Length: 95
View 1 (cartoon, helix red, strand yellow):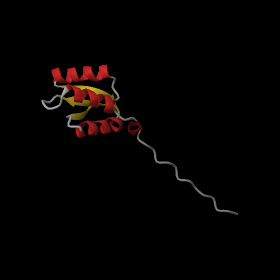
View 2 (cartoon, helix red, strand yellow):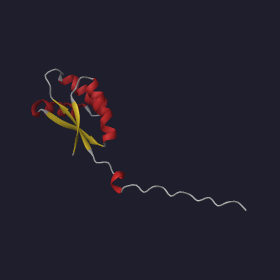
View 3 (spheres, helix red, strand yellow):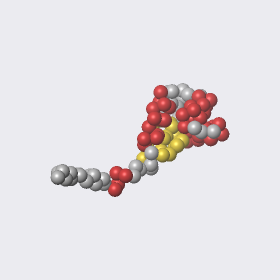
View 4 (cartoon, rainbow, N blue to C red):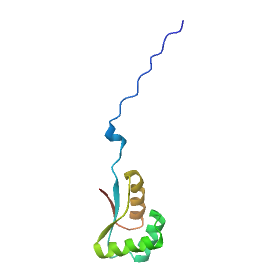
């Protein structure tokens, strides 16, 4: 006869931890970066079309900041880091 093995039940996860709240990637205006550089960066990092990136750049310029992308923190943080590495001021804000 073999001893019975008792399996440990998986710890219960808090239902709220299963859902990550969406955040937005916000780019801030500055007097250093050119429109072309911001447009190129938004296309390469955020996957924007030229037209979308150009519109974002105009809004950033005239409004001072703009949420260029929304999603999970896990997806937005690498984009924020990549923009900051290019000298573009970007933050993540909760919705």
